Image (cartoon, rainbow, N blue to C red; front, side, top):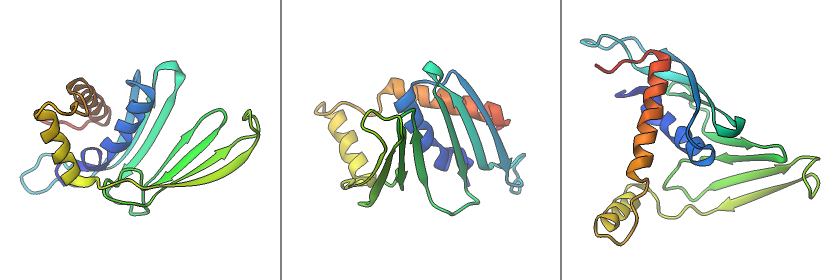
Amino acid sequence: MQGGALMDLGVYPLSLMRLLAGEPEEVSATGRFAPPLPGEIEGVDISLSMAFRFPGGVLGHSFTSMEVTEGVTTTLTGSWGRLTTTRPYNPGGNDLTAHLTRLENHPDGPGEATLNAPTGGGGAPSMFRHFNDAMAGTAELRPTPEQTIAQADAIDRINRAIGQRFD
């Protein structure tokens, strides 16, 4: 199970929240741990609930689990409406669906729409091509080294919140 639910699955919603809202000002998290394997001191997190406060009072929450197999959805909620996606982190899929719901107070009034977006080739081959292009100087490295360090810092803050130690 390596790094547990956070490192296997939870990094994706964390990255999306940071992309949309900035760096978290506050982090809280609680986790459920697997029993330690032979030779280990403690088990890894297998379910994890994370809550964040971002600049401007934006709140974010994610539940990530290696125990639950009901699928992945992401919901973004704002004062004018809500956007829900299915399979938002599937790099190789062509089935990204987003459902938009406009609330009563939206300037255009209430409404709903469903969007289907092709996600392209994605997956490991796409990542390797991008890395090669960045090393050749024909593309900008994504994420940037600064974004990668900020992600690692956020992961460290979550691990501290759940009491996960890596000695």
